[in-house]
Image (spheres, helix red, strand yellow):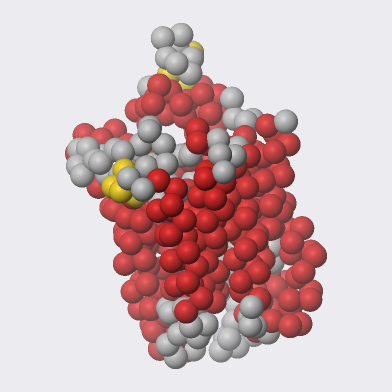
Length: 207
Length: 185
């Protein structure tokens, strides 16, 4: 990352957060994990969400979380094809287009980390300090990401927002909850990352 | 129209995350280890810049105040943040960036995190009643508190309106400018 390159990226990211709030509403992601897991839940147990004319949204649920705020989540699960859900579905497509557009060029310019990401996707073998052929099995490779994802979303739902909704959108609007969330997250994430980094290095230089 | 906007803005968000390098767990982890602070600069500057745009557009009266979305402050924000921090610090992704990662070279790990996230979100839905019973969401509940009074709907700490947000934004951008690219060895 050279000179003012970072600033251009920050202008783009900041503009997107502002545009979303200006045109529709501030960016948020983690609620849609509850919606999608709720859709799967409903497929298995169709009775979990019921129509209820007394609720403002017209839907109720036997689950306290889906049912709260006048069945807001219950309605999103029943009828998901609206702004918030489609917004999150569109994220990978935008990332993919940017990846196609700049991936190769960045790969040559930007050095190890980026190319490592690409190579590891292609050959599953690029890890600094790990001898090729010493392939880990699928479970071991992806289990940490799975557990990490579990903790991220369990925590985000408890806090009622994630990096996007609380930290970026929240702090952009001067929301006190956004500052609290950011403080709590970094207070734990920084020591966790450092300790895990030291342990991995001790095990053989893997990043 | 709503759907088209969702596709457009969601796509733009995904592209911006990728371009910033936020969809790459290695970059996030080296930021959290305070080694490579480039991403920290980008994020802090972006928040500040977005605040400036927001406050200026509110000042000119072109921002629809009803679009503001302030979340409630309560103890769950902090406890949830701690749990979130363990996941963030150990795998270097967040709910938005792992979704973005499923469209890039790191899609396998991204997908594993998304699936883990779906199970985690489901586990929370199932245990919400328990947490509600403990009073977690009522402790330290300050309502939808904001720093500055942008809208009559939300209580605020300071009553200097969008000017306060403008100053905060400029402070964030200035701080970002002085964050070093390289951190500790």
